[in-house]
Image 1: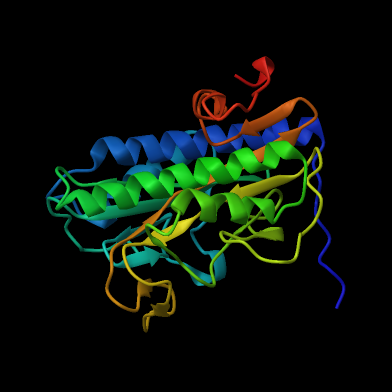
Image 2: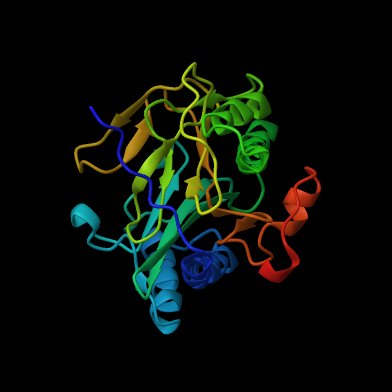
Length: 271
């Protein structure tokens, strides 16, 4: 079977994607500001939707293959694709919020995990932080201009056996559609994958657990939970490879602060 064709973007197209990325970031920041014990996941979804539509965008998720909300909000043992509803958040809940926006036909996609109030224990705090660091290590691996599957190796090295890396769910290309080629793995494999070149835009999104790597899908055909009931975390950014370096399109600073600490240059004009 032929490999699905990768849609490489021009600098002008990447600039348009930055607009969608910033709107996605603004929606997620508004949800973060609203996160507290006693709020429902439906209320948080409404916050994101209002920001996206107020900024002239369209929620990427709403209606996607029939998905009924503007965000995915996944709590505790839910890994991804949690449907917002009447669930009320409590102190110590681990909450992952995944959000996307479309502006002029171009997509942004990003996610973060936070703990509501104080963490239940140090393990939850480690889960969130190690997964976040693994995302940034995966992003930094794009800078070597090697092969795409080096991203998965970098994620696995960052996790270093401290967490489970969810099997069967990956990052992806993104552009004129939310999900495009290529697939971006979160663990090391023998196959090298496609070459990393300027114009490549991908969403890098490790999903980790405090337990095993196996998951189940609930009867709603969306919600993905850990088989063993372990808590999970999910972090994601949309990243463009430029001639001059990397540009994290869904980070307000373009990823400069995090990537500088890893020795990766973000061009000044992408601020």
